Image (cartoon, rainbow, N blue to C red):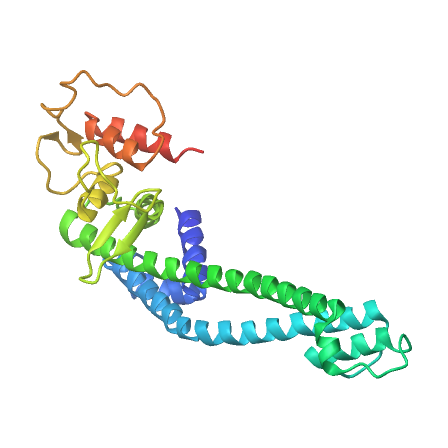
Length: 305
């Protein structure tokens, strides 16, 4: 038990950015002999503080993007100018269009006795090709950098959205479903992490009114076997009951043992051990399962790589 508690202290210290003494002070009673009854609530509150700090830092993302974009653009143009000077063997401090004009003058010097006008230079194939090549390479590089930054920002927003989803799910789980958690704090924390893992496998969309809508792999509404949209709370309940029993549940034989659903299996369905191919199939199989053990077996099969 002591090894498990030490492992839990180290994990929480790393996750919450606390040392092990601070973790012990947070969850242990004054006599240091036992765990506080509300230790889990205290740890979750501490984690919410950590998430709020991360979200507060997110406001600097646009400024970082703008600065990175400007810097990358300047570096791209500077490298193209250096490459052009090396290619045409010219030494000059000119930049941009002035550099292209200097290159053309350098390459055509001595070819004709008469002076070449600026208009003739700008109409020459060398000038036009250099302009096109420089513009094309600059646009491609800038597009590449833009997509990279946009991808990073999209990833940040996705993580931020998942935090909101998990917070709403935890609120529904703790205040409405009230599952029977393990009395061992480390095991209870592991159970919650497993439920978070099931929730995090899916995509979600948050509506303007605050509703969270589950999506499938094609970012369309997640539907059940009958083509009906699946409610967020129903989906969370499905995840929870695939792992845990609820404190208040119908059709119980005894403590922790579910009675067979009289409506289940009437169509002759029995799970044959086949792994669900997607979220829809997983949900359908769990709904048809006739016992908690069968639900857990289906869940373990789906999570297995």
